[in-house]
Image (cartoon, rainbow, N blue to C red; front, side, top):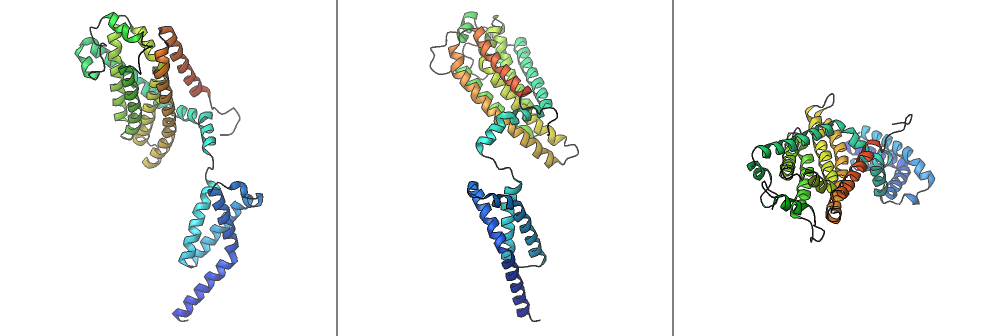
Amino acid sequence: MSTEQALNAAVLRSDRFRLEREADWIRLEDIVTNMEKGKSRRLSDDDVLALPTLYRTLLSSLSIARENSLDAGLIDYLEGLALRSYFLVYGTQTSFGRWLGSFFGGGWSRAVRAIQYDIWIALSVMIAGATIGYILVAGDSDWFYALVPGGLSEVRVPGATEDALRGTLFGGQNEDGLGMFAAFLFSNNAQVAILAFALGFAFAIPSILLLIHNMALLGAMFWVFAQRGLTVDFAGWLSIHGTTELFAILLAGAAGIHVGRSIAFPGARSHLKAASDAGKRSALVMAGVIVMLICAGLLEGFARQLIDNTAGRFGVGGGMLLLWLVYFIGFGRQRRGSGA
């Protein structure tokens, strides 16, 4: 058989192969196109039920086409259609509203509980950081100026009088906008939360150091108010938004530590697989951290200025902390006997 005859025979086989199966391919492509465009309601029940069968038939056709070295253009077409069909048959198809419902309906809380070991590590680090800052400034007040950025402390400095410090905590309902220090705390803590997560890939070491440094600043500020007997009042001033804000930092730091710990100790998995699994879980936690930071910003912008007494501030701050704890600990758990 000459080369020309062999080529003609191959074309004939390809044409016959296409004619025998093309109707199924066209039907599958129409179904896939409608689903990709969000027009699934236009499909009949028969089309929806036929999707898996048509997909498997397509794979069989693709296998035959490859084995018999049929037309390259035909193979490319079948491969493209197979890829598009795969995501519709096996991928998770959901709207943003459904995803949001699933996220707040238990997805976020389950992701947080999944990294509980890392949360305890982050909590220990944050407590240690605040303690270090307090002890350093108590031993030498010059450490305050090394830990707290200049221009932000105003009258909140070592040696300030009780009246001056108390004036920064109360009587601020008529202020325009947020106080400089409070605004700094929010913007700084938001940056710390994002960086603590983003730097987790470096075996979590930068995340831990960042948490220590940030909490050392807070510990130094606590000492300034403690020296004048205003520890409780300062804690109340901070708690109204701080319970949410610091909780968000805790989760962000834990998410970064979770990624770093998974890379450092992947177990039986490969480093890439461990990093991928931890990254997906931590990203879900971080989506919730953004929500918490927005809540903290609203509390800081309104409640902190409207409530001018320590008891009321503790009430709001404690209520928010209880809300988060109840959600993370108890919400979205599987019922006994239910499937995973």
